[in-house]
Amino acid sequence: MSSSFDKYQKRRLISSYFSVVLSIGLVLFLLGLLGLLVLNAKKVADHFKEQVTVTIFLKDTAKEVEIKQLEKSLAMADYVKSTNFVSKEQAAEFMKAESGEDFMDFLGSNPLKNSIDVNLKADFVTSEKLEAISEEALIKNFVEEVSYDNDLVNLMNDNVKKISFWILLLSALFTLIAVLLINSSIRLAVYSKRFTIKTMQMVGATKRFIRKPFIWRSVKLGIIGAILALIGMATVLYYIDKTFPELALLNKPILLIGLFGFIFLLGIFITWISTFFATQRFLNLNTDKLYY
Image (cartoon, rainbow, N blue to C red; front, top):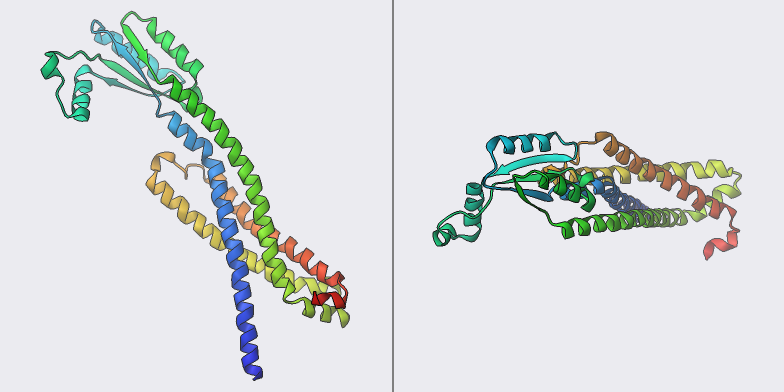
């Protein structure tokens, strides 16, 4: 009978530890994913900004040397990420592939223009900078028109500001929730041992001596939970990097190591501080109140 009861108690204890580890691991994992989002929010925003294309259309009278000089000056500009010359023949082939019809059969000639597609660095994708680039290009007499989607640029910049604000707010809120959830799990685990705590105190054990094994056990659970969270974060990070290599998420290893280290230490700190206050609460309770 006693053996069966001991096995039952042991299963309950293991189940309790498993619940605490799972809670800690899941909360830290979600918090870590949010941290990855915060670290890479600007990089993702920059990636989309750099997809905005400024198209400089050239007159048919433009000489090859003039086009080459314009391409070279654009490539050397500190605000330009890349340039690409698109001939009128290439443009016609692209339109044919897109529409499935050869419009030149109806028109008899190619009305399209030679052009240079320019992609700017993210920090320069603003309405003011695009307008300045457009005016600078139009000064040249062989440039016919400069085209870009100004409404898209304004919308993108506004959304980036809004998203950045909400990400920071969500990070603060989720950090608070993480602390509260882990604290609740630890308090429940300590609550199941409240009679043991009071018994040790009644036989003369000091508060520090009583707290020590509880804190050490919780810290070990926190370490295990943090390791599980880090494994999950590394898996997600690896998958995203393989799926979207253009985001180059692994290009800043120092920041990633810092984030992983922060999550690991956070798991230890929260479990330590939660266990400290949970045990302290039961140490200060009267024996009669342990039943409520």
